[in-house]
Length: 289
Image (cartoon, rainbow, N blue to C red; front, side, top):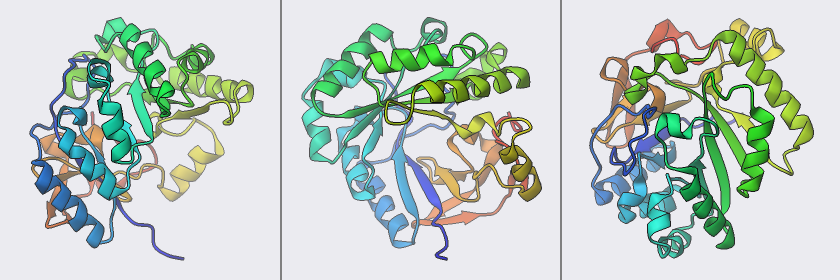
């Protein structure tokens, strides 16, 4: 069997035109677009699977060539640039972008000071009209964890074909919002609601997917297997994130100086640290918060 390639998430910039209170990114800086493109090609030449991301990459349109060369067809954006300048849609198509992934934090948008839902509704409508697939990312907190079916229904109203749930992360500006953390009981109830919602809304209607940072469902066969094989979280093993200074981290949720695990040199990932002694039976981001 061919060995799976390590996935490298190349972070392009830290610039953003929004100030969401829960933003978990802690790195700073911005790559020069030409240097970023060179790094993408070096990583590919060294056998890595390359993804590109950032804070708000549409603030520098030149970054889109990185998406094209990396073969990345999905772009994560907060929607503000697209709402202000609709000509950007044509540029996205030129560089092969087919899907737009945007955040709508149902029930907690105002609390998190995220981009207003009225603006997001306009962008989703325009995106669909222009032929893009759309996906919604929603942060889950103690306020909305028990509203999964309702959020799926709202996502469908936006025209989204996917809804991805992300457990609130206490890093970055989110460090000031400890009260947003879910208890294990709340996580378990959230999972039960996801299973129920999937029965009502099959993947052909909408894809419902919790991010891995929820960890495995307590008591499930997957949880038991994760403990037995110490294999759930891919951070630092199957995937890494690289900041604009080419410092390597286990994942985008763990980009704090104390959690650096190596460096990227001429497109080669050099890892010199294994977090938590190699423990990977659950999401390690919440163990290292």
